[in-house]
Image 1 (tube, each protein chain N blue to C red):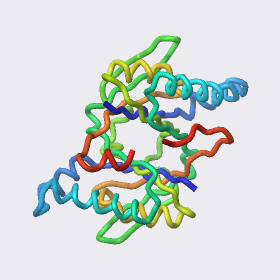
Image 2 (image 1 turned 180 degrees about the vertical axis):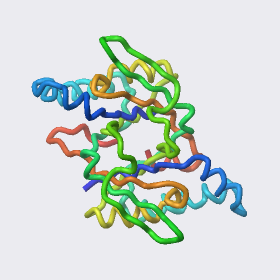
Image 3 (image 1 turned 90 degrees about the horizontal axis):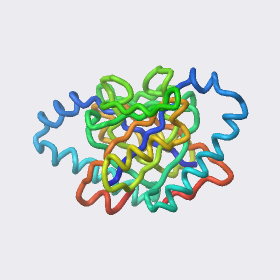
Image 4 (image 1 turned 180 degrees about the horizontal axis):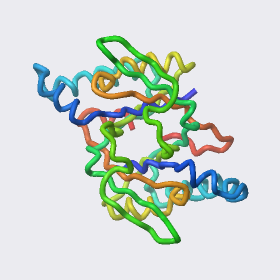
Length: 123
Length: 125
């Protein structure tokens, strides 16, 4: 089964972190990704640029509206994700607990919806 | 440039829209299939997936060196992440045009975010 690990960054925890801890974070993510690849669970993953770079698109009365900024004003924002292949939820949660982003927010674990004809083409 | 289209879904509204649609859930699935096909034909699709409903989510936090596991999504919000597309687009305007065509824009909000590019980012599968 495939699970998505959504890495939620908390702006207060990030602001409180020491500079050297933030520098070490990238290396920790690199090592974490390598561990996932070695275990054969890694499907893909990416970091996102900070939330202020986001744009949101809505349809209202058939009209497209584009606004600058993330869809919700929140101290916690999505910072990146990993898509993993795991035999069960417990294994996915174990990987989530090892994610270097956890001390700076939280990781939300969600199972992928299997859609016939889609998942074999994309993702 | 790669952009992530984050499909934030009002799950109640989606159920209403699907219930009112003549073709029901298959109509929505067909719209997504056509959208995905259009992205593939245009050569912009990198990856995409739908997520199971937000009540299936689990949250993992570490505080004071203790791992906390909680049921439910990280935020109690009307709109929850329902899926994503990762696309390759030449600029933000192109990415926004694709976002506006996403079937989920009719019952939710599409957030478009550029990917962070590192010198040694693991290759996208």
